[in-house]
Length: 492
Image 1 (tube, rainbow, N blue to C red):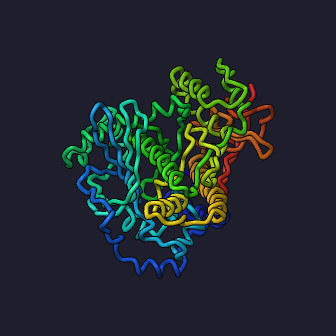
Image 2: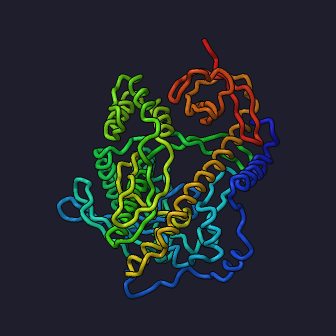
Image 3: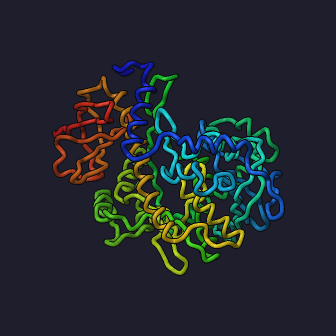
């Protein structure tokens, strides 16, 4: 319960979200020109013949958040001889509906991403498209870009192809229900039971995903786990913040998408076309990661080494699974943010340190992210044998812009979560909390408490603290409008 008017919690957070969008240079509403274009789009893309394959009979399904309506991907698997398998990932063919340089495309190009705030979603594309005409909806025939991958019994990639196909989503599934079923803590979701063969197919997908994950970790992918806070409403009343955790169902999607994004990057390279890559460069604060490991009794090399870091994380997760998310959060903060860069044929760019992959292009969420729509256009040109859909200098400008706007969007989302947390903490001024330092720089020191799982500024007693330190803090003040939560350190 908060001191604010409960019935107006959502509308208050909506106003805060809209103001934050504008403050960060994001456009919350579609232009009249974009809406006029939208009126002229009445059907999904016509299902093309010729080189477009018909794969509607496969056991395609979507797995997403319980309330997701913009469905970008479907997955299916096929068992092959000798323990090998084939996985197919279908991606919504947004490019066939949203034309480059159209008014709708210009809005997407400016914002570059959908912004998911606690009280309101600001979609990159109008919902008539993203949740309907370009969404891979249940029992709807849709054209898609398909990444087909041959996986050996040991989880290594043996071959791949990318092509357009017509698909049909036979089951719209949610992470929580599928995870509970896979982990033997819940019943079989009725959507799975309703389609013959889907249960067996999902178990095969789960098995393949675990193998893919194992191979990535052998090469140094980091086993990171954080507790992301999501505001929970009952009607328009804010009732709490819920921590979202990893699950077997999420792992299917995550590992298949990582594989599909890698295949996409290599496909474009094989066609001698430029591509947008997502990279996380060498950690900027590796020295502090080394210090954290030493505090836990482990030694890491002086120079960044993802495999050594992964082995340390595995040991820590086994030794203290309850506190492991806190350690993960510290490592994530010290790794630094990702960014978009351009890979020019013949040149080499940095890989993704956290995923331990060299070739990685965002391609799997074109309804939600503009880099993925750009990549889809590049793929379309490659499949058709045409020149690149974008010049290199345009891609370089887009890479910089997409990095900046993605950062802005994350700041908006965090602002609204912090405002929601400030609402929940209004009545708890003066209370004590266990906290973890998550940021320390000249700009300030930041700590995260566990209940509710939110960050706030340490306004007093921050001297000598660094990322990963634990301490007790006292809640000093909150400011809902600005999303400020201020603590002071409690010294023994």
